[in-house]
Image 1 (cartoon, rainbow, N blue to C red):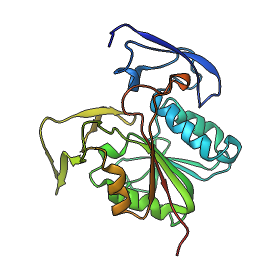
Image 2 (tube, rainbow, N blue to C red; image 1 turned 90 degrees about the vertical axis):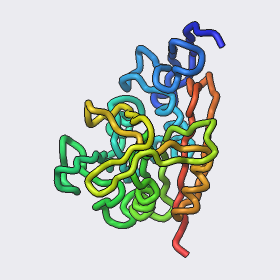
Image 3 (cartoon, rainbow, N blue to C red; image 1 turned 135 degrees about the horizontal axis):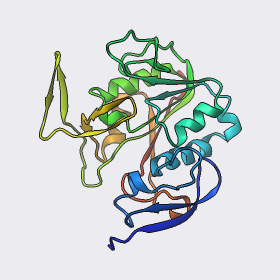
Image 4 (cartoon, helix red, strand yellow; image 1 turned 45 degrees about the horizontal axis):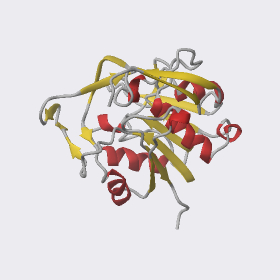
Length: 247
C-alpha cells in the first residue's frame, strides 16, 4: 500500500453536500484524519459520517428533529453539532464524578452511564461515539440505556472494533478507589478533559453477540468501505441496538 496522500470527492451524510476529503495515506490514517477543509461542522471524520448515514437511513432528518435524543460525551465536530443545532429535545451528557449527577456542568448534564438519573422510557434515540471503550462496565451502561429508551427506541454508537480480535477483552478494572491496568495503558482524546480517556476495553468481533447475550437489545452492525461517502479506513463499524415492545 502506497504512503502517498489521498483525496476523495464524496457526499457527506451530515451536511448533504459534495466535498473534497483528504488524508495523509490511503487507508490507515482515515479513521481520524479523512477530513474536509471546508466542513461546516468543524471537520467531521469517517465514524461521524457513518453514524449519520445509519441515523438518516432509519429516520429522515425531519423526523430526527422531533425525537427526544440523548448523546453521551458529544464532540465538537461532525454529527454532534448537527444534532445540537437541529434537535429541540436534545440532551448532551458528560461524566464529572466530583459533581452531583443529574445537574448541569459546563453545558452538559452530568451522568454516569452505568447509573443514570433519567426516567424510564424517556428517549427515542441514544447515541455515543467511541465512548464504550472507556467504560468499566459497558454492558451495565447499555442496560441503563435500554431502560431509558422508549419501546422501539434505538441506540446507535461507534466503538473501535479490532479486525484481528475474535474476543473482546477488558484491559482496565476499577477495584475500589484504584484502577488496575493490564499491559501498557492507552489513552484516547477526550472532549471533556485534556488528560485523555483511559481505554478500559478492546472490542473484537464477538462484541455484538455479547451485547445481545447480556442486554435485552437486538443488535445489528454495519461496516463500510465507501469512498463515495468518505467512509473508509479501519474501524468503520456502527452498532445499531433496538428496543422491542414489552412482552
